[in-house]
Image (cartoon, rainbow, N blue to C red; front, side):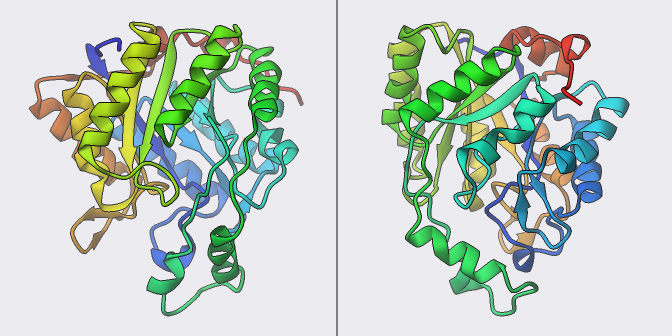
Length: 311
């Protein structure tokens, strides 16, 4: 692993897992997601990882909605924009790629395999639903896997890679590291790699700190110095795993996509609040926070001046 001299904070602003009935602070509309992202950037986030939703919170793939979010962020900041290609289990591959193909971000997420991605347990905790779509949506994940086959991964690498987009490789289990190594060997995934270890999703590797260290060991074996590591855990373990990743020499990810909490029994009131908390931890470890320019240099991104959108 490339030990980080400065720690990149990525903020996953809204995602497509958590639903409006879980928290009044979850950003929903394009305007809300934009303002939440801007707050996170001001608090110290170098990268914002973006999903889009309709005003009722329903996840959407429409490039026009993404553009409403990204346009103001790009106009007001120099933060690195990372567009999801994960979307949701309800979307086709074409739909999941639509925004990234149109908007050509510097960075896009790429899930490194098909998997059971279950968050049906949300239905056991919500007693009052704000919208009719929410409960069937979360329950569907118990029977509907997230599909990202090898040909879908290759298609994504070729399609987005052709426009200079690089990738945040999301690895939900050890096998995903070996999948990434396969595409590195094929010459389709080019170092320096950003490996995002994802822990605590039902169907993936558990939020156990031994698992985090094991993932880093295997990644070291496969990629040597050709990768940077970042980690997050879903839910209550978010800050602990960010701390552990930074302590190991890696980067961190926070945000309301991954956890709605700021402490035990306390809902986070904003993404910026989570950024502020993890930033304080990183600085207490004696480490510096990476700027967007630092992140671009470490990850070999092309820079906003070389980003052109398809209108």
